[in-house]
Image (cartoon, rainbow, N blue to C red; front, side, top):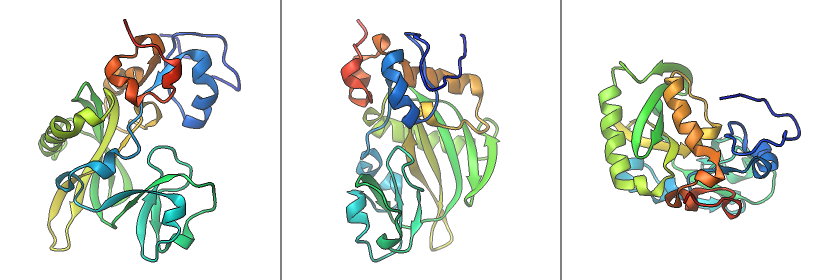
Length: 235
């Protein structure tokens, strides 16, 4: 495959794949005829609590500004403002109203990024420990078996709510009693995710499906297509 770094305009290529940010994607993917797959805004908030281990609500930025307690607030997909703990809603940055996820405060002992294709974890990587960058391949990791077991149960139960190519972040939550529980961090667009120490070839398989030619878009993925009106399903 040829690789081209795009500037402000496309070069007339068709049937390409895309990897990059959502802002730039909005300007070029229609010309490139690329179908972008992404999880729905409310997927995390609709998961059973056995997979989240915390309260998560789908809301709006204007509603979040009324919070009088500390909470973790983030955009569900795009990075329009920093995902962070805000002491109160008045501490949120200015900006237009938009969907947000509001979560209870938790401590992640370790977080893992999983590249998922057709409901199967193709590769993965630890990427943080206690909020600090700490990349390590999933293959051979001391928690690999536990990661794969939790991911398999999650994808069997809730995988239909995700596109066929997606990144799912999971991690180990510390409990007030000093224990640990596996939980879902979030789901992300594979075409806008750092693979950290994951196998790059296997990660690329997921990225290519997540942002490929619109003519190859499967009917199963149409609800997850960002530019759905411009993407024709595969025959």
